[in-house]
Amino acid sequence: MLVVVTYDENGGFYDHAAVPKGDRWGPGTRIPALIVSPFSKKGYVDKTPYDTASTLRFITHRWSLPPLPGLLERDAALVKNGAHPMGDLTAALDFGGKS
Image (cartoon, rainbow, N blue to C red; front, side, top):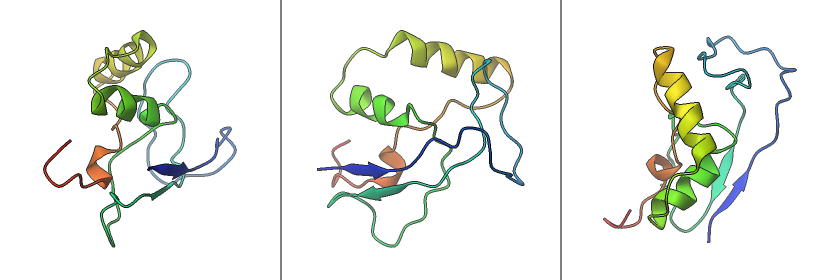
């Protein structure tokens, strides 16, 4: 089981960190998230950049599904603008060698 608790920031909060330039939809300012799972790394604060589609990235990565076209487009836009693609939650999880 994996529960991701977060919210849509709707662009209304100040963030002192620079927002990476992606496509016309973002990514936006950073938002908090809690990952609740027996697979979460205990006492770990993950600094990997994620966006609201990171849960979809996780599902496609974990079960070896084809990447969704919209996620590929977002990642390509980030790379085009000198940023890295958003993460897929796996950095915050420990599957005991199985990822």
